[in-house]
Length: 473
Ligand SMILES: Cc1cc2nc3c(=O)[nH]c(=O)nc-3n(C[C@H](O)[C@H](O)[C@H](O)COP(=O)(O)OP(=O)(O)OC[C@H]3O[C@@H](n4cnc5c(N)ncnc54)[C@H](O)[C@@H]3O)c2cc1C
Image (cartoon, rainbow, N blue to C red):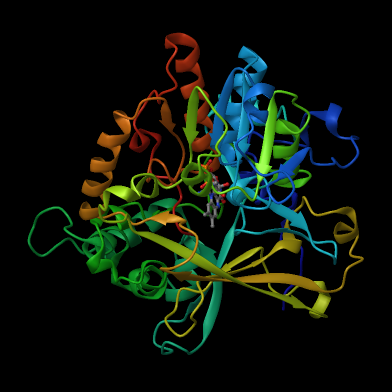
């Protein structure tokens, strides 16, 4: 039965000592000066009361303007840096009714800190990014670990299931296949004995061949095959080899999901981090509930010298009638479970369901995180909020679909964007690239470097040079 919160001998949200020691975040750290600040009254203006109109209000308020579009990480970092170092002013508009983009979190009426767009786990290997984010929040060390409820081989798709670490570790293969693996060498040999090279003798030509050559048919069947189908609505054999070439093959007992040097959660959530970045800054004006295209069509965007565009690149060029880029989305089904045993619904913060008989991909239970409000940490709330995640084609564009057709189409859009005067295309949707939070921050910081060095707000490297990003989890 669940016994939460998900902890180890090191503490809540920590891995066992050997692996927790690899996390360079060793205790609560970050900007203590802001810790005791009262909750912010957002200095934001939303369009129903203050629409953009033909009067030059914003332009006159901001004679040196960057109209940055999207209050998510990319837009926020650029507005913050341009203000802090160059004294430039920004108007950030967002079609949503809140700041923070997909990182947005909030405290429910039951007192649970929850994410509106799925759990966000911060992890980075970039010292520069880690230094930067600590300016705007306190951080709590967190070693994200995922469990999977995986069918026991031979028990049939809906048969017995065991709770095992994901990505697979020694414990996973021992529990599922009785593999008797006791050390790293034995685990490496186990993988070797399982792996199946493509029959044609060449490099894996699709996702299935890639997976079989990485983990072999048994792990593939129970953990990766049907999960991939649920995530992409395509079986691995219909996907690029690259999608499954990255399957982690752990030989150790390290059950942490990420291997990065710094892994933590913002002590008061991501929304507070955005508030600390933007809301006290007189150079930054935020307008919510403002759709960029609606205002562009009406001619009511504020005048600006430079547009930082963080939306979908294909939407920007919709008038050209080119095909749309393909995205996967998620549907979140939230449920408040009134009185789960011991106050927790499941054993870990994230439990994946890789089998075909369960329609959702994973269940997130927020109460397990160490950055919950005190009421939760003290156990004063009996119920628990869970979110079941269903992968789908329609809805908010979350994950670019990696295949040759989409890549070729994106290159056409990117060529147009490169010639667009006065517009910088920035971030996940504008680059058609899944950026982790830290990658989005680093990309924005490097673009700002370029602005200072060359006068041009342009990336220092191509989106793919940031590495693959986590993608659907
Ligand atoms: C479900 C999910 C889970 C994730 N989990 C993690 C995680 O665990 N760890 C991690 O490191 N990263 C995670 N990420 C990635 C993280 O959310 C992104 O790195 C980050 O949000 C990137 O920000 P961005 O600025 O590039 O773009 P986005 O977050 O995509 O922001 C774009 C902004 O533009 C706005 N916008 C779009 N269209 C319009 C319009 N027409 N008019 C006005 N505004 C508009 C949007 O409202 C949004 O605020 C996750 C992403 C998703 C989708």
